[in-house]
Amino acid sequence: MKLIIAIIQPDKLESIQKALTDVEVFRLTVIDAQGFGRQLGYTEIYRGHEYRVNLLKKIQIEIAVNEHFVQPTIDAIIAGGRTEPDGKIGDGKIFVLPLEECIRIRTGERGSDAI
Image (cartoon, rainbow, N blue to C red; front, side):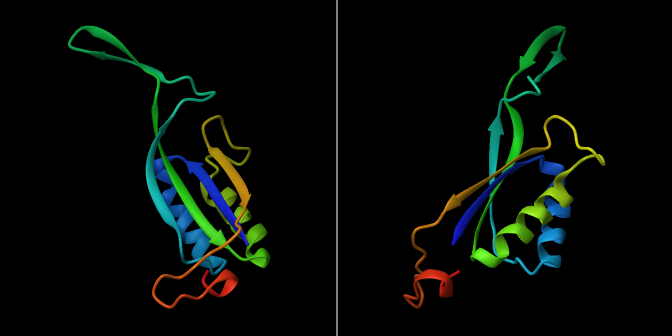
């Protein structure tokens, strides 16, 4: 079992959800996030004053999958989240972590059956 965490652009959530549905991954958690990376933020002018916005809005997706769904899930996130054919800075990151245990609260099922 693996836990896949993806940090993506907010406007790419819908296309990623569709790509995940196409590879039969239907369960995910979505979290509003802010981040600072290679994009370095942007400058905004409000009422004549210049403000530097360093933390950009992002979306964090968490998906627990069994081993045979890991690569299709990664491929779907890349396909749905890339902004151009070659991508650009700020498209996001994907992290794959080992998932030691999963327990379904309702039934008490454990491991891959709970996912």
